[in-house]
Length: 478
Ligand SMILES: [Zn+2]
Image (tube, rainbow, N blue to C red; front, side, top):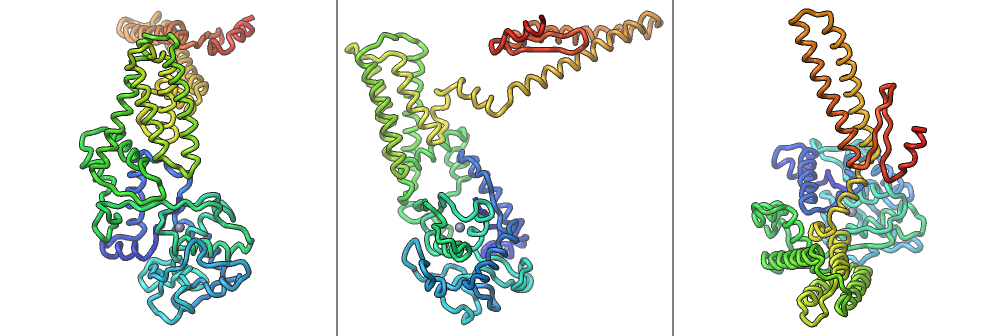
């Protein structure tokens, strides 16, 4: 994920509030990632800041200039659209027809650009502005070039998927493509797949700062969900998003969020109904309803997969899950001997929960997937053997110290007078208490967890995790 931490808007705002532009950018970057966490969005594997990639960006611009597709003038370095378009196999813009609009990259001193279509790769700084040295004098990168240069530094000359809002299609993404093609000159498609997300509207208007028509994530959580668990708010917003195709624009309203919340409650009721049925195990007899439910679950799993493979059609996928949940409930209420057995109910709830949790990243369904899964995640995150070794070594160190102190105190106590003797006896008692705790861990606590531990005569220990290879300890002992 790329972070623009220097551009005209940041510099303007920093100037207005009397803050350093980088400091201001860091503040909003931190707020953005805090919002992602609230929304339960996984963090990106790599984050690239413009200010940390100046060398890569300068080199990228130099290469385009070297290839004859950029020119330097007093106000900066510009991409030569006309020259690029005349080259064999090159096209600009590539993603859609050009719309000549002010993209915020036009130079103030006009007449310098050869054509209004040319866009800035590097901008000469005015006195007092934040700047970086370059062969064209002090300046800063144009907005478009950062994405081309930073992704190149991480992924090389080709990307599988590039995403962004649909408003970035032109000019931003078209310029990114042109810059990369002008740099690599390799005749390959730079990006294999573009993924453009639709706009979020409020009351039918595009959510935008300039229209003062927006709700922040923080407001959503703090005002609309006061006192409620974060997981519920994150899930409701996610259910709302899953209810529309990512490509289409969607309208946010509190009514729609309420609809999402009632969908969440419906799934929660479904899981608790399945739970009580499975826990009670009141019917394990296979019935006609059991077979029906099995078939429905298998079909649902298939259909969900197919809908998601169809350009992430979450709308249809959610409909399938809702249908399976309500069909399960109907069968559980059936009075005609079709009531499904425990294992069929379990299978149906598994399909729903696995999709909600694993495919859609919701909290809803996590309880159902339950203990087994959360402990599996634990063991993924921790190396159980390493943790065990550390604890055993810790116990052994304490035991050795206790034995040492006990021995020393016993020796001293014999030849001491009453007052000092008492102090030594106190030490002895403390050491004995520690030894009892150590023995208790060896003889009771650890065996309960399946770990057999043996203290050896030389003050060391050996252990084995029972069940995994119980024979090995016997071998060692023999
Ligand atoms: Zn970009």
